[in-house]
Image 1 (cartoon, protein in one colour):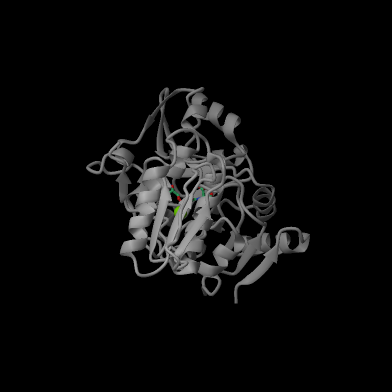
Image 2 (image 1 turned 90 degrees about the vertical axis):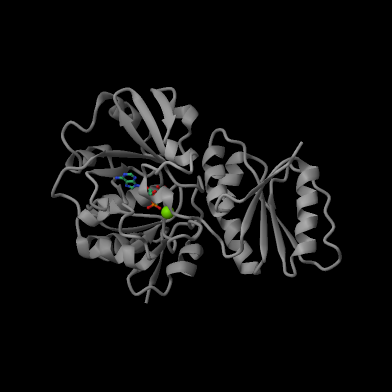
Length: 348
Ligand code: TXA
Ligand code: MG
């Protein structure tokens, strides 16, 4: 049985920390999405995370620590260059994962999937920080969803995917996460930052510290992404998703066509600011789900809305595209992944 624990109850947080310290698997809130945590030094604990998620073993996990000082034990002594240090000071605790040369023999090799680097971050969520301090272990944690599904931003999303897993001991409920999309994953070489996965810390923020480039593997279908996780289809609800790139009239036309073609329900995910007058042809098959009014709202709401589409049993999902700036770059990356690249562009 998976235990349901509450972050406002101090004895529940103690219990979650104790489970982690005893090589059990616990889902917990971070400022981005819920993570599925395990002692990163233990093969036994980490293998449960891979099994619970059905995650391919070549996809490494991010290690979460309570403070910047704990990183030194996990990485090679020359890993923290002056630029890396500046980035840690600027963005931690927060949604930035740094890929650094791993110190051999400290972490389970399952965490790094055999690579000679490790992703580390200090999460910016009080419950996550408390849990990490109390457990006294470095915690390997991927997002707490079944592999390929949208990441969880509420404890009930975790329960829907993993609530009956024999490999998971507890879910620590800390309410809704904040940012809603995952951390930005970067590699730092000399004076250049390469974004391997766009996320909560934006390219614009990083550019204040160094020249920023984006992994060509994220942009070009022919290139292999540097981050193993980026090559998989991800964040996908059960129904196919199409990203709509055009104005309100275009979105209206695509939605009406979808209603004509589909026999079942059609979902349209859009921002409140896109005024589209839609009639659902009297059959009540159209479900318009709000992505809020700002790009930050869109980040916070996207995964929950994709899961709602599953709950509604929709046949087709249409989603408004997102601007490619700020946290919008991460939202857009996730939308296109959920859609497996499927998009319709207005010819205008
Ligand atoms: O916000 C987040 O980062 C959340 C919360 C729970 O912290 N975690 C998360 O983990 O998104 P996950 O496992 O769903 O995604 C981790 C990504 C994957 O794309 C993985 O391939 C990449 O980070 N990654 C991890 N270690 C790496 C490494 N050594 N080199 C390159 N990419 C790495
Ligand atoms: Mg994930």
